[in-house]
Image 1 (cartoon, rainbow, N blue to C red):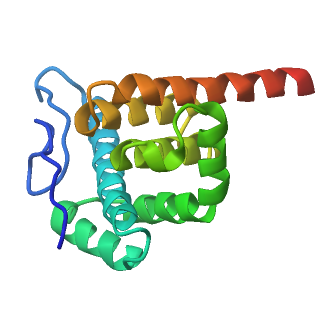
Image 2 (tube, rainbow, N blue to C red):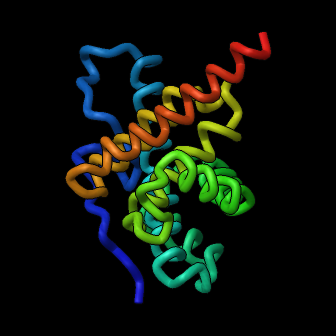
Length: 182
């Protein structure tokens, strides 16, 4: 059984590539390229979420590599940086115990196994990017905003607030820790 639960928002266009909605006449080429790159990354995160969701649904026993390969082929044939997808997936898996422990600490009223599968994988992606991604590639606020957008699009009614609360708490802890080091 394969999961196909994502309906891509209005940003899917042009030969399978993700594209931001814009007027060619109203933006310069640089702005178009940035919009396209950001939309491509959003599509990549959506594919990561779908893959992690399926893997988690099957109690982490399914072959995650095959799931990601299939989802990249089916939903992201035009993604220009598939290495971004693989980097995030690999990072989430390598740091999974640390990330899940952090979620349990920051949201103690929600044991990890009681958090909806889609929400816990949104948190995993967001926390990995917040804690471990190259800040020049994915600034902290971008990691948080992208996770909130995933939660708005694919989570439940309160998912975006939950993701914002968890990620915001971790971000504030990171800032406080940096301030004490300085």
